[in-house]
Amino acid sequence: MSNPANLMTWDGAVNLRDLGGLPLEDGTTTTAGQVWRSGAPDPITSTGWAEAVEAGLTTVVDLRNPAEVKLARDLLPGAARPTGIITRNTPTEDPGDPHFQAACGPWLDHPRSYAPTTAMYPHLVGAAFRALADAPGPVLVHCSAGRDRTGMITAMLLSLTGVEHEAIATDYEQAFRGTSHRGGGVAYDVERGAWVQHPGETWTARQMDGRVRERRAALLDWLAELDVVAYLRYVGLDEARVRRLRERLR
Image (cartoon, rainbow, N blue to C red):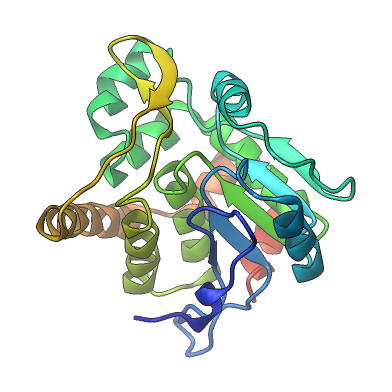
């Protein structure tokens, strides 16, 4: 499944995708230029931020943890963001929590982590969705690689919007493949209990295909059991916010 809206980029952006152009269950498609997903935006240049503003970006929802943000900025001080862009830091997990490490440590880059994360941290996941709902205009959602924390939040948003599950899985797959040859960055070392500089990783096409197959299956199983509206109500979002989230990509 190809999404032409995803061909755009901002200078320096990593694994950037527009969530427009995805098929809805009613036969229409999601609106382009309303929600983007990406890896950490630290490499975006001044030119790239200007392009983001021109595209209409108003808000950045950063799903990284504070220690991760600090380390990333120390490693790669980024260009100054335009003053008109709001940044909301809303981490979705506590990597230092031993319960999180036990449940999700082996699955930090896998949709198998989504169910335990949403169960353990409803207050954190709810804060991320409140930031999305309250944004005054188009939004960028990101974590570090733009793969799994971002994938979890955007999959829930797309499901709420009414995007076909196979299309959600394809969007995840394309973002996952976008990290197949990523260079060094920041990653959480479960054994050391700290965010560390990641040396980078390279997978063969066969390895990538195998990873994609099992992750697609896990994501589709999770989506089949997910009631996003019920979850958002459970984490405290009012009906007006749920409605704004549902309509953001329509």
